Length: 523
Length: 112
Image (cartoon, rainbow over all chains, first blue to last red; front, side, top):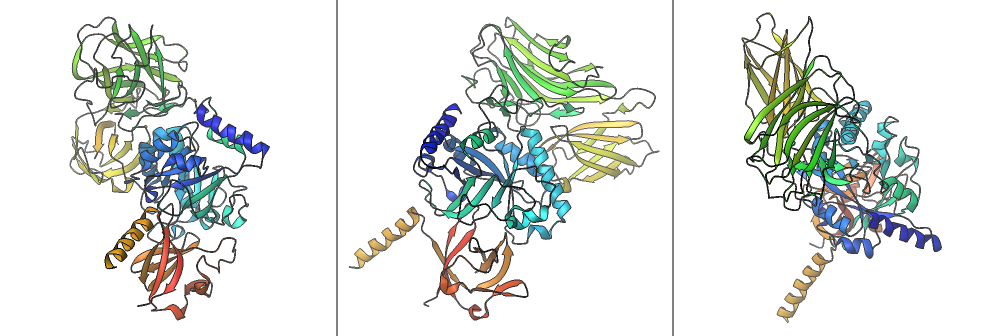
């Protein structure tokens, strides 16, 4: 990243001695094939590029990874955009899908993520599907979900007519306006800005000839500012988003989505989501003592296949893995979940664990709790030092009520087999006169479900003929709330409208004084 | 001679492909609809985009060769195909932009 900025700075210095430089870029998708990014950068002097990552909830651009990897290597400042289909999907489903594909490319030094909001290819105007307020709500939900997941504020790409239709509610998001007037610098008229006071990016042409892109005309874009402003916009070398986000109870994850950039440690794929932080210690940390998703193959792990456990997960496909093979003596790695524990009642931390190795020395796996935002960890909730050769469920409770709780999973190891955790959940059991009991005596099926329907069978209290169902995603967000009717201990609920993406979810059903919690998979 | 022509023809096709020249389609305009502040023309059941000329706030001029700038006409605030081109078979050259739109560049009469 420093090199990248130096290149830009060098150009800026040159420009100051000659003419003012306009910062130009392109946006590409698989329609452009596989550009020769060194030519895009060096011959056509395009400094930035957005690459299409996803569309809707099912289309991942075939060349996205190629573009991000090779564009970055060529010192082009890269970004990722998502083509929206509000007429088809929920904002949450589309945001989750986008983050699952593009999440690891959203970081300081890159362009912010962009939502591409335009008329769908079907040809029916987007504005004919929604009222203005409904469309604003959809966009706001997408922006919030992506920002929450990545820590980076997205920008909005749209046409003049849609910008006008959106009104004033979204103007806090930078605007990338589609105004193909052929001029990178001319200020777009109000027709294109809607209620936005200014523009940040402008798609000034749909037919620019660019060296390195042989497919034909390509979209040309410009940035509204100078080099210093651009560098500030994309983020300084000091991570701008090293912030702390506290999730709430209940929280669950099976570590299925691509891990995100650690803006505090400035490393790729080091955090399951924005509610986590990664820290290391130990006597000789050499970079191999980090937690990652188990399939990680990047620079943190020198021998990713060494020490791997089988199966790779207890729930879903992936797990969280602490790798330290080859092992520096007593290396330590911590993965910290920031969580607001102020919900009433006892909190249960449940997860599956594996470490198939006898008596490495030293070795310890601890779950420790901080109630002061991670300043001190005084409460050791659990310690495992024995061999656990197969995935085994572990659970521990706490009555802590700190709103700045941190649950730390920390390993000290000199062994040659890695440590894995999976299927993590933090839930609360309210106490008191109106106590709700957690009842596991329920069967939900099909599980995995195809995302269209979920049925349940349990010993229902005849006094209650409805159940309030909440479906939480792995970020702990309530993605579906529904009142379902119970008939002789059976219920059936439609999931289709929630457009749940494949992954793990927590089912919470409330009926009378009973609460039912189940983990469900959507395939 | 025939072989030479064939080789030249093949090389021309390769050249057009390699350097991303415009493609063409021949057919009749079936429908006209507004699309992302431009116009969507359906030709042979395929969507093409007719771009409004830059800086034309009136949106009455199109990015196409001057002989066909009257391809669409405004009637009661709505744009529709100029009747003189209705049922006419035309040759459209187009390029594909960043989002995969097939943007019309030129229109010519069909010689068939």
